[in-house]
Image (cartoon, rainbow, N blue to C red; front, top):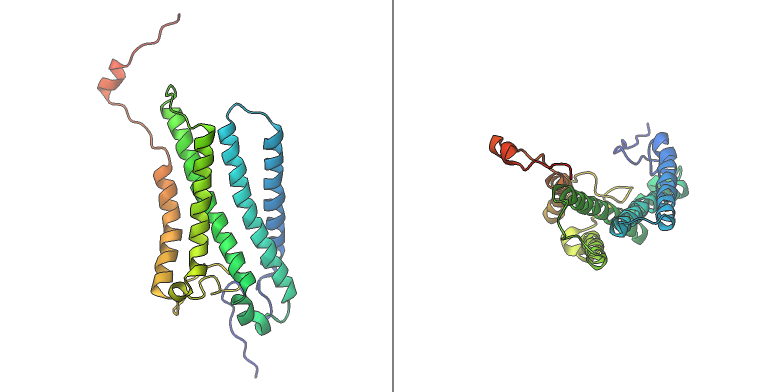
Length: 229
């Protein structure tokens, strides 16, 4: 009697992506992600807008999302390469440079996307709450913020590759090269890093979301009345 190990929900004994739905939609989502974001970048480049700083942020967000599409293409390509015999190549694939780079690319994309959305949310919030304020981010300031966001995202994604003694095979714990699942053999430092990164995402975005501004009874009566000029 021949026994085969159970799937971990991602990979199986035969395929990198266990489910046929995953194998199909990895290509569908990759194409939609890459070509959709490329279309937005092209359209934003030809359309002239007054708020060029916001356009730069949108283009930067499209670039970050496009990296996730490239990551999905890589996973789909290696799924086809190892189709039917993934068990022979599983350990070599998860420890390979290609897997490490693909995982860091996905991490870079997700982190930069969240940071950019946080920045854009805060920018819009302050422009609505303080519409007559003259303190608006200029072109140089916007470029500096976007560069800082990309630099921070790059550092967060590359740290596990540099510190192998601390993180171990951080990106190679599953077939898709992304630390999605907890591992009993995972080092405490790597587990803490993952918790900080992934649990911190919703917290950062929630803190940046605009909160409703509540006025007191006195504030409503004391508010100036605007008359027609």
